Amino acid sequence: MTASSRPGTGEIYRVDWLPGTDVLHGTCHCGAEHSADDPVVMWEWMLSHPDGHRPRGEDS
Image (cartoon, one colour):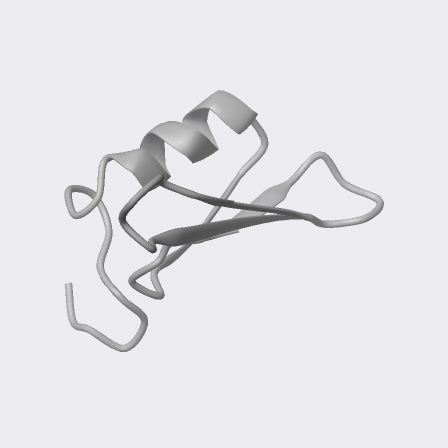
């Protein structure tokens, strides 16, 4: 598990590794979630906020 924040923003990003797989599960500071098997893809998704994802429960 990795938790990271952008300095001075208070935004926290969390990435969990799903044991037994190559899958990473990320949670953005806004609550949106995403899974990927490539760490670069995961961080690009997180840092592109708000483009490409919405918080849990928000309609697409």
